[in-house]
Length: 385
Image 1 (cartoon, rainbow, N blue to C red):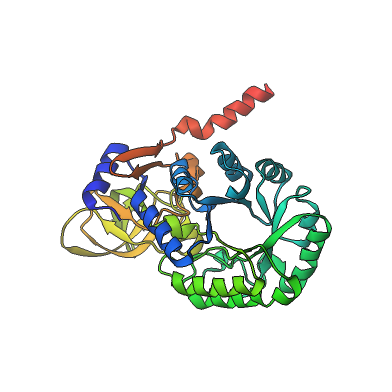
Image 2: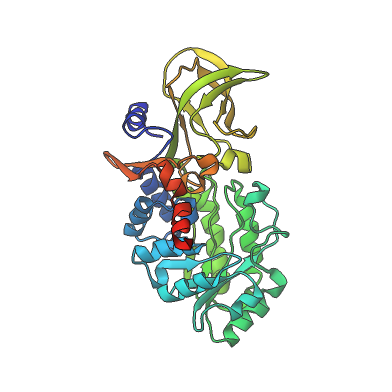
């Protein structure tokens, strides 16, 4: 996290709630991935943070993109991405995604057997495998579990591969992604072992894509060794990885101001950011480090409560703080992933601004105005009038 003085400067300059990103943290995370995985191709999972400032920085560093919506594909196209720079993923792709992906020349991840007939003719494809593993993360973040909606069952992978080849698609290889924020390296090792078990029936591959989902403190070197062993089992020429949260989580901080305090059965600090700015605590029970940007003796434990009329609108519980004063600023860390991109206009709240530090502050997304929130409704009235 950036020093207090820089964070306070940003809060004063751009207002709160505010997302700030440290570009150096993004660079450092990418360097760690490349140190562990060597010459593996890196595709950034755009869903973690799709701000153009982040995307441009990663693309300039030679990173490709994984897109899972028409909007993300449109962002990739706007940046001039094509061919091997883009992977199209997702369990329920629309005709728009097939058309956009085909226009770009992207590689499609086939998520179910019948999708073989839906991807554009002659497209490059990977078949996504569901390894049927229960892993050490929140249920909402587990994508390779036996009951997950993602991927082709192990016993149907060979048939799906054969169908892709029979249709004349360019089968590049297999894909596996077991979830997000996974700390236990043994989960990845187990998934790669099950994947490698398909080598005898699937045959030699061009690409093995082992996804991402690594916790910010994961053993990348150990995960990379296991991935290389699986790659060798297929004789695959290329190894691909798809980090999202790992690359941007620690770069981001949500800044929020104290608007008051309150005591009922618990002690609350009321702040100007909440579930509409950072949904992860309510959605996943996620915990984020919180740092007060003011000095003072410890005044006890407080819950950080947002402004929404929802009991679950809490950013954190039992945070030790000095006595809070109205206007004081709090920094909520590890918020660079699934923070701003999941913010909403619930309660007609304006989504926050975003700023990037790269030796100096730069505004990379202005704060929405109230009229931005309702503009599409007025546009619709004009269209139907």
